Image 1 (cartoon, rainbow, N blue to C red):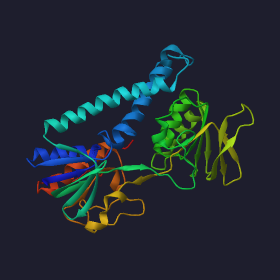
Image 2: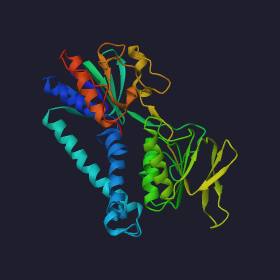
Image 3: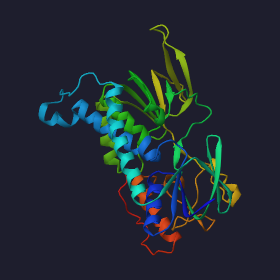
Image 4: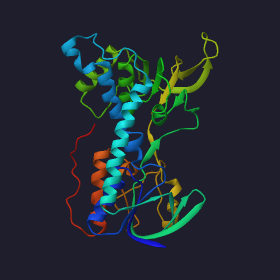
Length: 352
């Protein structure tokens, strides 16, 4: 049975930097990943893909050159989903190479498999039909989050999907309903609107982004409407279902009924209302930890849970849930775990 000074569960930004920090303190470290690729949501479904798509949209539409060439300038007339995902995949593969090289260079063991606690210092790892046990003195939980998928929404990954499913589409939809006007919903609404998709954005609050200055929000909402995005603010969705289209036999549309009684229809629907932690599979009850109702962990200022030798960092602890802050949280958690003095995390940081 292998023993480590530090076992990190999850290879997203918090897990990567936490494991590397442990290695730089001359500790024997491993990082455990249940998916077939490193990087977590930050590399594979969230931060990196969405920003790569944004850059692809800016380039292919010519949006960043219109001040010079005029409002009607467009680099590519017919933009396909393949054009966008090709760019994203290139960036993702490059980032994965960087992560793997960093872990190898710092002698961090990468263990593939799903981990759960069997005891305070004991992890069981499941890979296919095989299992193994490892022990560690300290643990860092950095399993991140996934999009919330309530049972009332009939997800099918083709016409009704989350932000993870959007990246797997094999065609460009003509129209889309986006439920949720948070950062993710607005980001994809703006991208899709820029390439000519008819977008309807439904948000329960009377305005977008209550953490921003009102002037910025009003300017954003104006610009969104200018590119053809329909904003349904102060509206909540009561029911989502797939219905037969009145034209184009054999096709289906997605219908969203609002609490106000309005009916919205589009070719597909993106549900982006909140994210859910991913700690249920860790069997935390075996070490005396109880996550909240969204499977997130509570930590102190040192990212230490109620169980002293177990730390948590990144999206799994909630706000601010940014890649940049997660990296720093992972480093600070590991430094505290091994008694290295560091400055605490600042209350002021860039928030995008």
